[in-house]
Length: 120
Image (cartoon, rainbow, N blue to C red):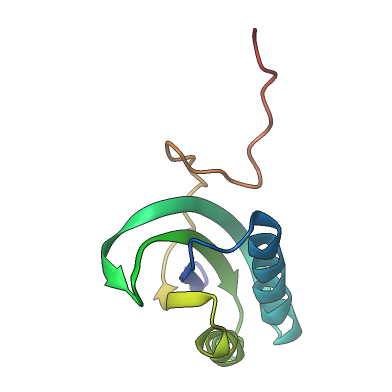
């Protein structure tokens, strides 16, 4: 039987600069490891249109963070997201079974994706 893992999807405000997005991603990744968890995968899903308006925002920057541990890392992670003004929504789901292979979605960027040379 495979060990369960956690998948936290959070949405950042669309108007924050890209370097600040990277700061948030690193902050939440570090928070998981400081709380005794292990980061399995972190993917930027990019800016997408929201199904409905949240805090007067029609778009958001989606980030998916997969991590495992004994569950003690979820509380501090969600507490930090709740207190942040830049996170407009978050959800953590406990998953059973093997972790899916990272997929690249159209229009989304992932950290693990290699850069392809541009052809002119």
